[in-house]
Image (tube, rainbow, N blue to C red; front, side):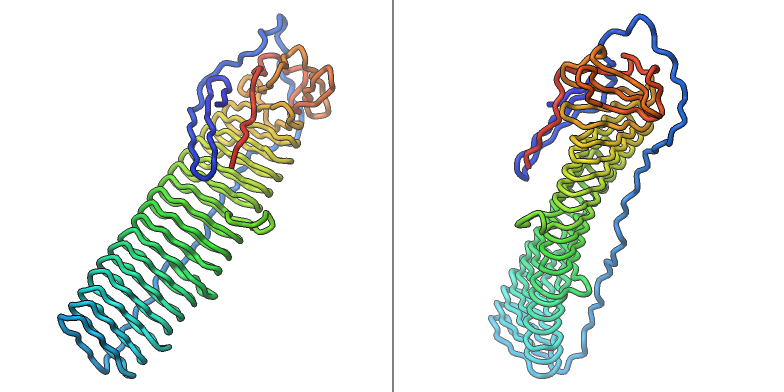
Amino acid sequence: MQSIGDVKFYILRKGRGRARERAGTGEGGHGGTPPLDAPPLPPTPITADRIDCDCVDLTAPNIDLSLPEIILYPRDSIYNGTPGNDFITGSSNDDDIRGFEGADTLLANTGNDYVFGGFGDDELYGRSNINDAIEPYTDRDLLIGEAGDDRLFGNESSDTAYGGSGRDFGRGGQGQDLMYGETESDTLLGELGSDTIIGGRGNNLPLPILDGSDRDLIYGNAENDLLLGSEGDDTIYGGKANDFICGGKDNDSLFGDLDSDILLGDAGNDTIFGGVNAESDSDFSDDLLFGESGEDLLYGNAGNDSISGGEGRDTLFGGAGSDRLNGDAGNDLIFGGEGNDNLCGGAGNDILFGEGELDTLCGGDGEDYLFGSAGNSTLIGGDGGDRFIWLQNNGINLIADFVSGKDLIVLSGDLNFGKLKIVQNGNFAEISIASSGQVLAALNGIEARAIGVENFEFLPILYQPVLDF
């Protein structure tokens, strides 16, 4: 549990199943040592370069989600099954093969064939290096496209579909479907039901589209994938290469895996990992993560990542690398991690931890809490009454826009106002520990003589949280 005035937040992190609980920002008093008998002199303006809190919006790229046109060729031959269990092999012509009732085995053979399983548990094989259309009706069907650009339609029930080699198009239909794209660039739509979709292999240019609705499990492949979760609580793994992953509605878990990915949580409370399953930090690349609406949990992991929380109370972790993290709207909790990070709270009452080296923290609108880092951080409160917090073992905090009477400097440990030394250093009011000379903070554009005890809050115990991933 962390406490600053009336602000309390709990951080529990263990493995990937994480819990979090945070209370909102209150109106805590300044605390600290009672005021001195003589009030401080009013601040005298100093000409200094203003450092504004400018949060750069992160925008997801536009992706063409149009589906390929389905072309049904004219038929040369028609093969109709019986109410029983049929075994039908097509010809070298363009065939129409229909199993009707029974557990049928239908082989398209050569030609541009349309294979309809009908009722029963059917096995449908596309065959050859020609374009086939394969469609069962109800019950549990097995669809095997094999070579060629196949079209596999699951319709009702729980189906298993193998695209085979070629550029395949598959619709799972209703039921819990298992779909394998295998080689080439495939488009696989899970549709209704809780589906598992595996992209397989292929050069995937243009991008294959893998999509489902309800509670889906979707795997990309070793190339560039477009993975869409649609409705339901989905789990999506990008695999290798540069993937675009969209969770869709509801509460999704998105894993970019290797290379440079774009992950969009969309609606719902989502958990998003920019990179996992790498053998070393060198295997990670730069990811784009977008939480969108809902209360999202976003992890950049290694690499120079750009992370946008979107609307809602989001938690952002930059991880290793020099990251850019925007909380956007809502009361957000943001951790920069290692590297030289840029953190922006956006609208709302936000809590920002630099953690890394040369970090820049910008609170934005609202009453924000800005924690410096072990390196020398630049802290910009933005609009609202903000608290600039120095933790033990922090570096020097450059506070760019301190406003006396509205903002507070929070110091931890056994420090009190009597142990501080405040001097003028150019355009800065420099605050240090009198006994050691250690510089704690420098206030841009502020006269040293204008800083008094009322500008501070002293807390005896204040720790930066240690997070276990």
